[in-house]
Amino acid sequence: MMVNNASSSNPQSPIVNNYYGGYPPKDTYDFSSPKKKRCRLTIQVNSSPISGFDAVKYNTAGLYTFLHRCEEKYKDCEFTEVLEKLQDQKVGIDLLGSITAAELQGVCGVTWGTAFRIIKSYPKWHSL
Image 1: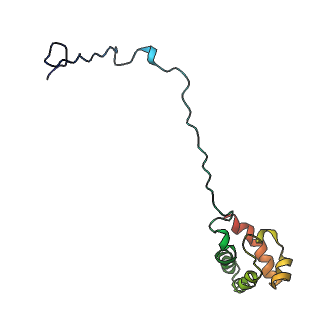
Image 2: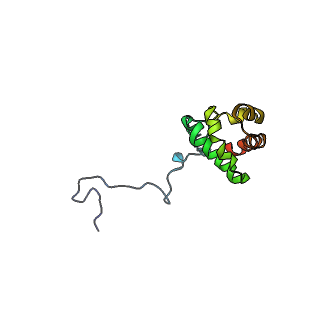
Image 3: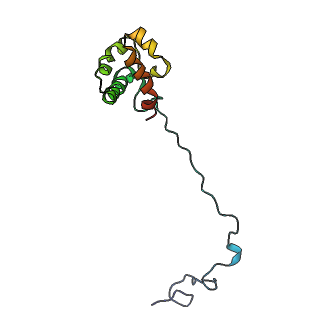
């Protein structure tokens, strides 16, 4: 084993460890409080406030998905039958939270019970 010091054939200075007991001198310790990691808030920006659907699909795929879920929940095929009526009046999933069952019945010709179930089911579906 070759030792690197001034008397060897290598012209470099010897490496000297001035630490006693393997610890650095106390003047190099950092006695300040530990640094806290900062939490980063990441916000996912979607082009649509309704998760999973772009605004251009509110009246098509979005409305179909919602009405199909209602059909499965209530075991009533009328939900998918009203799809075309709602699409004809441009009622998409973005409007279902701000209209009433009476408006769906009067404007779109949906039976009152189905209209009421649509309005009642929308907030739960929208929050998924």
